Image (cartoon, rainbow, N blue to C red; front, side, top):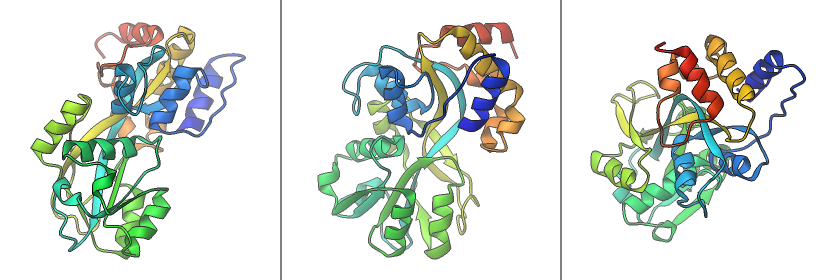
Amino acid sequence: MGGAIKSILEQRLDNLAVQVLPGAGISNVLAIETGRAELAFANTVSTVDAINGQPPFTAQAQNVCNVATLYPQYYQVATLAGSGIASPADFRGRVLSTQTPGNTGQAITVHLLRAYGMTDADLAGVSYGSFTDSISLMKDGNADIFALGTSIPASAIMDLASGREVALMDIPDDGLLRMQAINAGYERAVIPAGTYPNQDNDVATVGYATHFIARCDLDPEIVYALLDGTYTNLQDLGSIARAVRTATPASMGRDIGVPLHPGATRWYEDRGDE
């Protein structure tokens, strides 16, 4: 997706060169705030934490602006079938594997534990590693829970399901309410039945969204070109992230609790009621 956006911007704006760097939901927000990047992908819940100065951020972000909400993300909790883990309340004393610090999925896991009165210390063990590491731990029976935040179907869970029988865990309504008390950006999301092998029922979980962010002082013309190019090429971008195909100016510009960049404000005004 980053490479596709690079091409769109460089085709639309003369003498503009875009460098694409690796990152993650939390580290990307920090990169924007500290001036190490001008544009980034981020996750709405992490950006809201940054704007409010909530952990894992140590101060309120002053130069992070929203540009566009792109597509939904799903917090997914996979357990080994027969593990006896039916809800987050059952995590105590078990081994959990999740994403590395700097990733939104890891921060959500911290929020989930907090929502149920736990920290890492209440678990038998926690591993912060790559998806590959988590899959290996689960397949070998050295972890009981794999928690990640990404789109569906997640290739990591598909890989895990190819070697072990897994179950996706529901996060009940009271759990969602507890998490919304920590971060108002969380919303209900449903992983439809059949998304994964042997998943016969819908799974209710916590949702958020991937969005574009930019430094608030970035040239509005660049942000305008980014939005115009993205919207014009939604179908092509959908070959990379399928869910982005259904984006509309209304969904892209919805209020998520992060100030809108001036260039984005102008673009949404120009699109009118589309």
